[in-house]
Length: 380
Image 1 (spheres, rainbow, N blue to C red):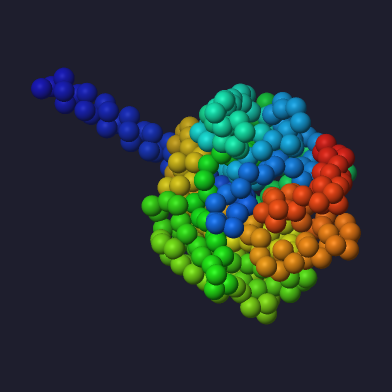
Image 2: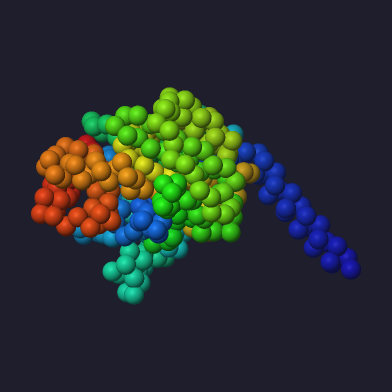
């Protein structure tokens, strides 16, 4: 009995010590990121080239060693997850990210190890990627310090993510204010948008968790419209938005929403500023906040020591081929208007496939856009 009581006391003291250590450290971790996909006419995700598109990362960001990676077919592009760390005093932590249905393809600082595997059965369907992971060991969190950070001569959306109050980090000889990574995925997105014969857009979920917020957004030649849908747990039909929206107001509202879901004000601002040119470009798309259980299942995260609190706010983005977009593409093909087609960038090919446009000019336009995107490997 005495031995058992003594053991219990030792366990209790150890637990209190750990709790005190964490409280003393005050370690808080916040993360935001995006999942991008393209829907076909029935709402299902199409196979496309998620790693294609114009390069938007500085040259110091490392990449998984893949040949012809921009031509890789997949279902989802995991874009710019960033981890921010806050602490009252210096802490050394280890960070492990799993991507069971994808690969982690870009990162900074350099992880100690990056793993991947693939399924032979899915190699031609965009479902080949699995067992991705990355480890950052000995991440030194340095509150109050301002070590020199890497930079380049060109502009990149990457730098917007630094504009927070997060502590500086040091991994080996690389310094940053965040852990950055991206990837390619082979999972079904949690939301599937589909146009109905009535012209309404049906939003259908594929997960048991309620999607707390979805936003139907459209930009037609600079005029924008959007509709908010909350508490999405079953299929709902939404009218296309009226083209009377105010982009400044939408951006402010998005920041407010992201703060409500757990981000700090500067983090939310940084997220919207990072993606403002891409999120609000011409075309139609549906944004949605990924439920936290779904984020944890798609992208398990382990940090040691365990943070006092962790916020993970991921925004899904599904591109939709609207009637307006379809007409703009058709008109551009007829007029051989390459400048207009270039506006659709990496999404032109999956849109053309839905339109069954196999014309010589469309193929030439796709090649031209692809060559332009591949012209530079990174931003110096």
